[in-house]
Image 1: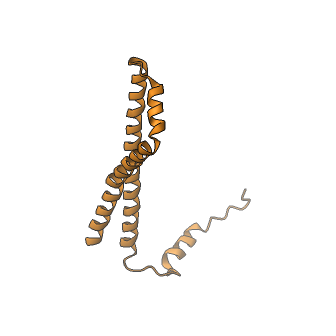
Image 2: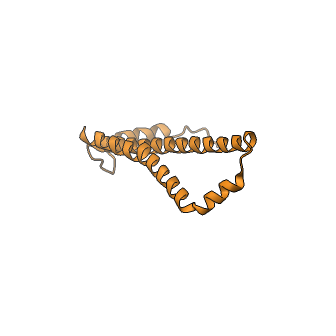
Image 3: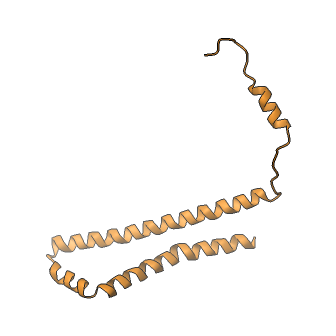
Length: 121
């Protein structure tokens, strides 16, 4: 590609970049603020992942239980569906309440405790 064998000026450019003053200013506590933000984001992501794992496990247990009841115990599904259909608001409310309590326990409470502990120190 290069017809002439002149050396690249990478070393010269690197020397200039290292020796020159930057054209921007960072505050003295930049690294601390950045580490705090990254820590909060990492904690938030970890707590959400843990919540989703718990939720998936609970739904999996319900699915396996329903499958076992269908296969082994010959459950009357029409009776169950009629019950769920007639009490849909109650069942949906209980499910939403259970998911919210799990979310508050596994995510919000832990995140705010982590946030308050990092702000004190």
